[in-house]
Each structure stands twice: as structure tokens, then as C-alpha cells.
Image (cartoon, rainbow, N blue to C red; front, side, top):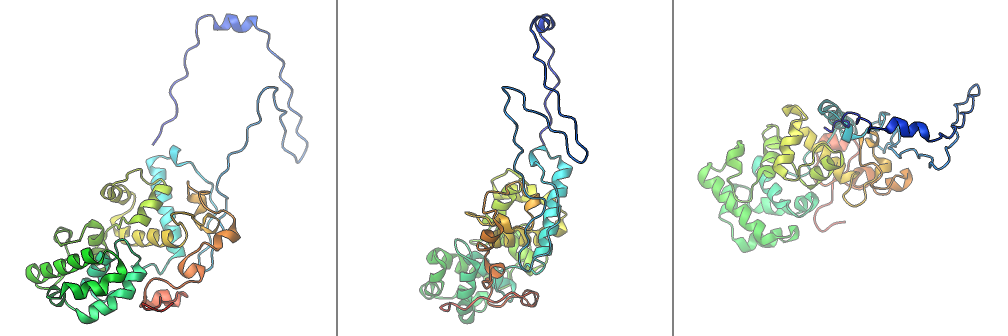
Length: 335
């Protein structure tokens, strides 16, 4: 929080005398206000007329399937108190919850083991590509014991479409061996156990804990980092510090859903290179409004996934998503 400037400086000796010796130009009188019209002040000679700052619109343009955006005055986060920041952050989350009431993890999975493997495979690729690849993997190796005993070359061939397939093969076979040998073939439900597995960090662990075990956690992926910086929720750049800073703005029970809301918004509207500002339902609350396309019609053309008329990332999405008009993604090899 930045505080206003310091105390008014004391005048220098002799200032009053010098001021009295210099003639003061008469100020032009302001025009008298006319009934029904605001008074207009004439510009003073030598002084430029101040321009009004450009701010986000009082009302955002909504997108198809999104709840109506509420009109609020744009504020400058640089002047925010801690309390104001918390209120604005929670307001953004509430707005996003109305826009994406069906937000969910976008990796297909039927059990904690599948979610753990899919999350490890999602590094440096899209969830869609992982979802198109894992059906063949889990059909051949349905349990940790099966994958632990797999031929690495055969696994590499299956995982080739996800990129970095050799490193990912080592990770999924390694974590499968650890699960089989140390945890009886079951995925542990504790953070300290999950992060010991090969290829598993805090982000992956929180995805699994929040979505397979119902234990709250914040998933700090690239989308999450980008948006919390644009919203000026934190200036931290280290994922662990971002997790701590943002977690302090919300109750713990909200962390998992918050992650879904932010990530969904980053994938669909608030893109990295060209955010669709003109189609953003939280534009009045965003300090970064104007970084992207502000024209509503042009912004609509930038929307991705279901809001842009394209299928989502899951081949087997939840019923709530389908009921809301979402469509499943195609299998691998089909457009």
C-alpha cells in the first residue's frame, strides 16, 4: 500500500517579500453557470488543458453464456489499502464464478492415479493434447504397477505427441514405481508425500489434492501467474510466493475453485499475447484494461474454447459443462 505524500514543506525566508514585489496577472473570471449546464473554466495562458485519464468503461461487454457484468468505477490499485485489495480480489472471483459456474479441471481422469499422471504430462503442452494421448496410455497401463513395469520405449511412443516424451516417460514410470513400492499402489493424499514423487512439484500436488481428494490448494500455472499480475494482486514472481500472497486474500475453502476460475479466464479471454479486453466481464475491476483489444466486436473474435464457439479441452467433460452448452474435444487424430 502506498501512502500519500509527506507534510507540506515550510516556505523559504523572504518568500513573502518577493511575492509582494512581483505583479500578479489577473485571473480570468470563470463563466457563470447556465441553468442545466456545468460551468466552463477558460484555460489560463501558458498552461495546457489537462486531459481526462483513460479508464476502463463503467460497464463491460458481456460474452455469450456469461453472466452480466456489474458496473463499477475503475480504481487505481496503487492507492489501494489491504482491505480494498481483498475486497476487489474477492469481487473478481465472484464475478468469474458467475461467468464460469461449471469450471472444472480440464484434464480427463477417473481416479487420483490418472489425474497425477495427466498433470505431469501437461507440462509444456495443452490439456487437450494430454487428454487426446492418455486414453491409449491408461488402456495399456491402468495401474501404477502396470506402468512401473512398462517398457520405456513403448511408453515413449505413446507419449510422443505431448512433447518432451523421454523426460515425461522417466517421470511417469518413476512415480509409478514409487507408488507401487512405497504407497501400496495408491496415490497419497498429503502434500509432503506427493512432492517426493518423481516429476511432482507443488503445482501438480495441489491439482491432485484439490480435485481428487477435495483438499484446498492454489494451482499457480502460467495463466494464474499472468492474471494475478495483471490484476495487481501481488508483485511476487516466485510461484511459491505467489501462492502464499494470493492465498492470503481468500479463505482457504475458496482456493481450489479460485484456481479454476482464474485459469479458465486466462485460457478463454485474458490471453497472454492479446487479451480480449472488449469482451471481458470483469473489465471495470481490471487495472490492465486496454492491454488488449477493447473493441467489443473485434474482441469477440479472440475468444477461445466454448465462448468462441470452439470445443473445450476434455474428451469427457462433466455433465454441468455439457448442460451449459460446452462441447467435448475430439479424440487424437480428428479435427
